[in-house]
Amino acid sequence: MSEFLLVFWRDYQTREIQPSPEQLKAYRKLWADWLRSLAANDKLSRPARRISAQGKVIGSHVTNGPYTEVMQSVKGLLFLKAANYNEAVEMAGSCPILQLGGRVEIRQGL
Image (cartoon, rainbow, N blue to C red):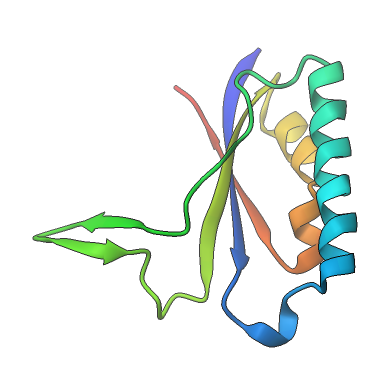
């Protein structure tokens, strides 16, 4: 079993595509159900974590980030246990963020 990092990306700035309060409530339930399912199948290698919308970007100097001109930003991280990339992709394929136009980046730990 290997560990995979899932990075959740979504556009949180464009007003027109943001969910209504009712949609957000239903969306949060989808997340809770999805995470419970992963936990019940012993696929979480670490607890799920949300992250702040603010941060710092380090290059030749330190700036506030993430960059505002980038419409999609990272909203959370999750570490899964999976046999291979195919299994990790299958689990990530049912992630609720995909229903809101987001994406999931998958990286295998080495």
